[in-house]
Amino acid sequence: MARFVARRILLLVPLLFGIVLLAFQQVSTPVFALLLLGFVAYTAWILVAVWRSAENVGRKDYGLIARALTVAWAINSVLVSGFLLLGHLGTVESPLPLPF
Image (cartoon, one colour):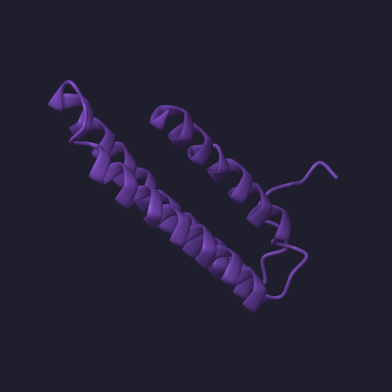
């Protein structure tokens, strides 16, 4: 049951980040900053959840790998969010070409 819940929680990450990217051109900077803050808060919550659960594995190596990958993902999320916010503050037109 715990694995099923963890998978569903982690599936929210691409959905949240997709919403952030779609909102890049359509919302004001304060609203965009709040969206990014929510994404970073969610990332922190996942980091804490994985860190606490990493001890509850059969092999300690898997727990260490889970912690390392989650910390790397959290650092990446914070850096990407920061650069997106800086791009929104500046004169950047679009971070990515959107298909629509």
